[in-house]
Image (cartoon, rainbow, N blue to C red):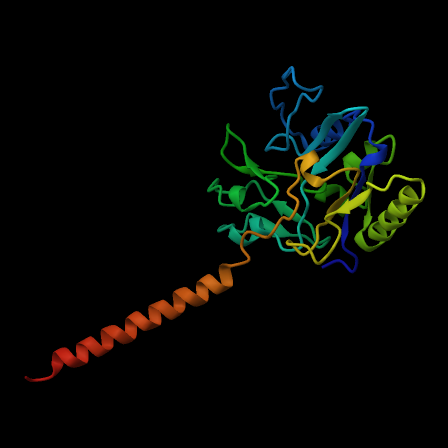
Length: 252
């Protein structure tokens, strides 16, 4: 495990919606076309994160302003996708990020409903699960992820997570001092329902406005209790069967 956890801080206040991050992600990771369409409801032609959209820039039109946000896998501290994977296709890297190995994935899809953010998805043509790797290959080569490298406004910042959190808090304080009191951080707290995320955001409205769950929880949080309950139930059944055998063996 790396001494410092690496991650993303996305400052949505300086995102201009250019989608350079989406293009850079596709180019570097060889992510295929996902059927760009004109939806007639938004300038957004990719719609949402998916198996072939590992970075997605959301466009939110409000009265008097646009909100834009480059969304991505959150690389959760407690990653339910990793918990439920039966083949080991998902693993945690030395940078404390979560990566899918396509050559190990068997396409079972357990990880898809397990993700509280709806990030990981299966590709229709091969059935396997895909998502952002935080450019694992680039990190191993000492480079920053392609999306952060391509961002012209530094809306996407990459680095040690502790440094990013400190930088983000200072940014929020400055925005508040300038009268932008709606500024708030999303996902940075280790006390949230997934133990904090490796990718967090500075937002200017409620999380739901950007399509984010307001209070995500790791979907496998009850598994230990369920296994304990199942074990207790199995033991009780075994004891009951033993008692029944004893009584059955007695002479009348």
